[in-house]
Length: 221
Image 1 (cartoon, rainbow, N blue to C red):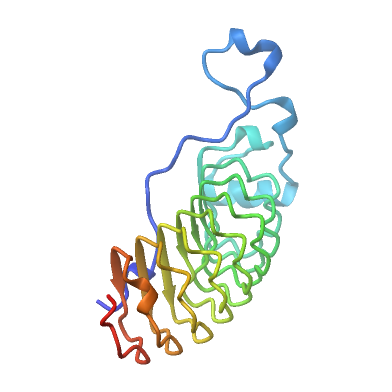
Image 2: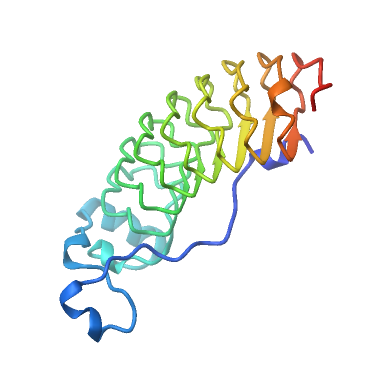
């Protein structure tokens, strides 16, 4: 099927982020979050989480490692969710500020249409920005392992993404230069009509150029 890899990114969740308390470290058998890392969850966000999960959480320390808050249209404050390991906020269209989520390991922000600034997300391992039309600057995302930029129509400069392991670029009309992406292992270029020169992509292990009408010469691949 056309660009089946564009729809989502998946992987096993990684161990949860935690900090240990130095004064009682010897008494613990497992690391614990320090008092300083505990963030109160706002009343509005608590209500959203309870409605979605049926559970009430008062602070960030109480939250589970995996949390699905997709399609919660009234969610705006995610400042206490930065220690969740796997977090889905897909379709949370009122959400704009994601600066607190840099500690999340697997983060789905697909169709979060108000998100603009993703500069704090460079340490996220897997990041889905599918359908985030106002995300333009992805220069801080070079450390992301799996990245989907499907339908991020304004993205044009990918010069910082050469070390991303798996990169999905679909429906990007402004994208023309892919010369920096030779170090990517798995690269999907789907419906990127302005891309013409793919001579730098000979080292890509898995390459999909489906419906890139401007690409004529693939002799370097």
